[in-house]
Image 1 (cartoon, rainbow, N blue to C red):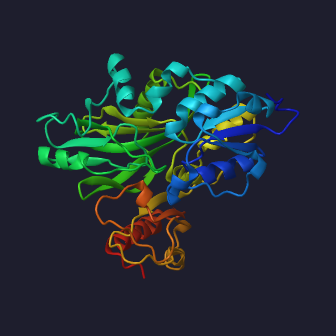
Image 2 (cartoon, rainbow, N blue to C red; image 1 turned 30 degrees about the vertical axis):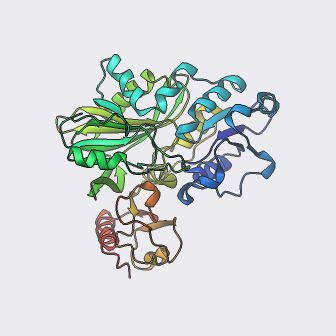
Image 3 (tube, rainbow, N blue to C red; image 1 turned 90 degrees about the vertical axis):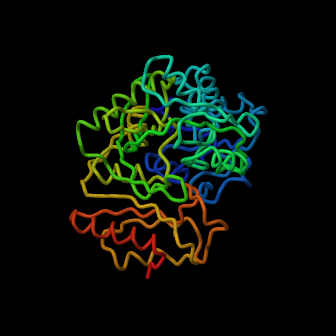
Length: 407
């Protein structure tokens, strides 16, 4: 391993998929040299998640199968830290972290942080709030699982692909016959059916060092049911101190029980009508949405996950920030009309700070049914000193997306 005081810090990212370009850009700001290991098939990664950054030297990018990794090669690179860039890659990231750095997680717990069923079984065994769940596939559908309505999603899913609310046995049978593919092209064949819980959904962004969990932000999702599936319309910072305390306390307990000692996590939690936090899932990586959640944290004067990492691992100094009101909007082009250049919305709405268009001009979806995070056509981040202006722009832009008449 390199000596941080003598050499430029070095980080290895295993399969950068979630907010990949944002992650690399932020590491670059702290003068951290980035190396990348791809074990995924690059040709199958969804366009919304493709790594495009030019900040990584080509000689620092390695491609190989998980079973053919040469540990000696990575040991010789003097890597200081290993970052998991995608849920499916947590086991190999944990292994590499243990082999070549001073930081590690218990390899026996790696599966808890990818298998959505096991993580809830761990909570159940430890008498912590959890979702009642059952694993199903096309061959083991029973006449009854839970009372309807109920939730269903892929066993080891990501990016909300396949997430749905089922209202009958007929809908369940129809669901498991369909094909669902992950953002990296993997076909899902097993699913989790779980009890239906009403509540507000929160995301907690953290970085952990040696078992200490540092919280960047707690953000609230605004959702809409579209063709039987919850769709995230926007997210914003939670400001209620009691809610923040309750959600973060629960999140830290969950992370500890799931074996998270070192690394990033994006933890999604329901806060029920009875004010009880219940885990949805833990994702062992930085928060997604192309970095939008971390950007909102920064706009609100909070330290991002990357900033906490840089400070705790490499003793980097963090700049003071100016606080502003902010929100992020996920645009789906619900009408599915040919997509225009949404950067032009900046001319009309003063709160728009960032337009991150993920789909090209003229784009239309091949299906108009369920929408997932991979179907987001544009992330828009609003930032303004005047909360009334921001809220008005927010409402207007959401309505434009629902109608499809952007201009």
